[in-house]
Image (cartoon, rainbow, N blue to C red):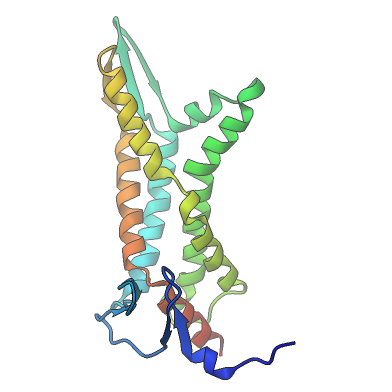
Length: 209
């Protein structure tokens, strides 16, 4: 077994290029960037944890509205039809298309919701000065791992492309769920901007002691 080198605990690796840097305190409002690729390593903000939790909770509420409220309304030859995201998921729930239904539900609803809950579980107690909850590190690791698979943004882009093709065949109007999805994407992006992963990891480590 290789002996653990305590000097490694004082180093942090760039998530983009793996360049090693000495860990140091970064003043609130300042940024620490990678010397090689200039990726932001740490960017602590005043009240960032409160903002992250509030934005995550807001995103969860928008998720409920986006899933169950009418998403689009189509009017063809005087016939009007409205559908929600849950209707789109259930439309493929029979026969050979069941895997497509499961994938659709997972990528645009379940995984984004799990990621938001994991962030709240991790950051919520620390926001109020308490020690992290049990398995908070695993929850935060899960939230980071799910980020590439939470595809609400891709869904909105796909809908926009489809609307361009459908616009010539029918009158299309956006329902409240469409705008909830747009707001959800914006709020989630803002939350990710406020969240400094290294700062969260360091806070988890400090509060565990």
